[in-house]
Length: 290
Image (cartoon, rainbow, N blue to C red; front, side, top):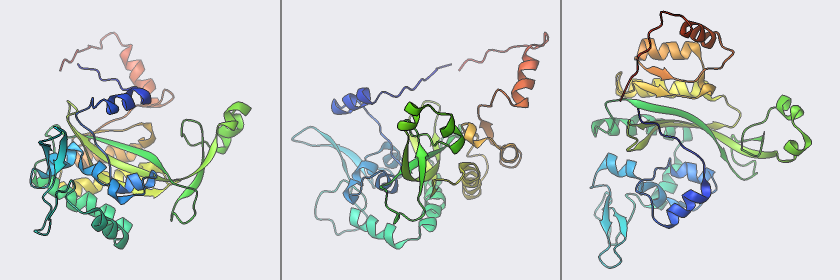
């Protein structure tokens, strides 16, 4: 079995990017970049340069080309009409995306992405037959401006983890000094990949208030995905412990045929039962090689 270990090392990653030592990048959306402080809408090329989009829509929407003079690899897009009289690196004009996002209800836009766009992915046979998906939740920080509708201010530690009032009172003075109040949203996502990690493709997203609980939102996205593409596309769903919900996990298995891979806490009965079973003399261990 191949073991892939990830470690955060920002200087290493930045140096590799400067040297061009990468062959694949993936991002979520222009919305995500805007909430992270990238306010210029011509930052949109940062998204369409991603391999997931190019693989999904094929060479008609965008393809990699080598510049004849510089030798640099760039993206060339023909667009969707006959009005283009210049080379472009995005299928859609950034101003068009700005107007569409502004004029469209946020909930409707997210549902469109989770349903209509996903149907396009399915027609293009983008989904890997192994059916591996990853559910996740993260905070999207924005400037401290109450005009960000639905955002809230929460207390975070130095690692950007939310701190409850109880946790704060247990901290040392040094730890407390490193905490700060930050305005934020919460983004819950469903990501599709394959066993060799050749691609990462977002198939559903939900942006809500920062203090909303991610657990029911994630399982709503799973339900929406299955109802959109049918059973059998999502076969394995990898989650962290924040999504522990016995009823929802059982429903995923019994009704949708999805196996949930999720760590459990040591103080849970399920963990205690499993450890007790492992001590039995008649337990037969099988080594699985892939």
